[in-house]
Amino acid sequence: MYVDRNAFKECVTSYAVHSGRGIWFSKCDSHRCKAVCKEGCKWFAYCHKMKREDSWQLTSCYKKHTCSKATKIGIMSSQWLSKAFMKKICENPKIKLRSLIKKAHSKWNVDLTMTKAARVKQQALDEINDTYGEQYRRIHDYAAELLRSNPGSTVQIQVERPPEFELETPPPGTDLRPRFQRIYICLEACKRSFMVCRPMIGLDGCFIKTPYGSQLLTAIGWDPNDQILPIAYVVVEAETKDSWRWFLLNLCDDLGVDKIRWCTFMSDQQKVTLNLNLCN
Image 1 (cartoon, rainbow, N blue to C red):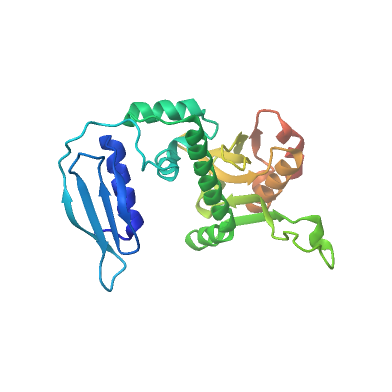
Image 2: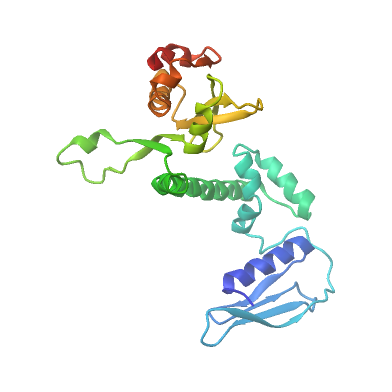
């Protein structure tokens, strides 16, 4: 049983690629779909839509092949390949096309042209970017869930708007939607733990390897077992004096002056050093 026709076609495509068979669809409409192998081979699979249902069912098939394996699979679409390579491209968006071609040949023994490899990579990147964009659109839902599951926590979100937002009559077609800029998170359990730990805070930042960039800034403490204790963290557009200032001001508000004025700060002496006097 299959959810719809596309699920059946995707299953047949996966089978054709992994088995190296020149399978193609001889019939494909709104009620039936038949996959056959190349001329002279008896293999076939027939699937049709169920009555009064949206699901499809495989009703008949012949599973033995009488043909030789092929290196060119006609039904191996760029959409199917983009899903197969999604994880690899997500880990390395700058992967070279020749690497994808070699991977397809070593994994499935199929030939992939440069044009098709470029199309596969672009489709995967478009899907990845859409996924990240959807997550940013739900950033307030994420903040609400953090506050619901961790009562007493602090979550601050800062957005930026285009200059046309201030105009009484913005130009037609202008995108006035707010864009994510920064988020500050300090969980209540981590904050309470730090209040009874040694007064020492380590500050550092690192890049976030996503299509949208950004950087992660963190404030770390040490617990009685000499283990790392996350105090607070932020995701900002870049590591600048202004972003560190925003982070440290929020941190001061959370921990309080009586606690933070006696803390020793440890950093790599970058932009953060100039902002430490804010907490005094």
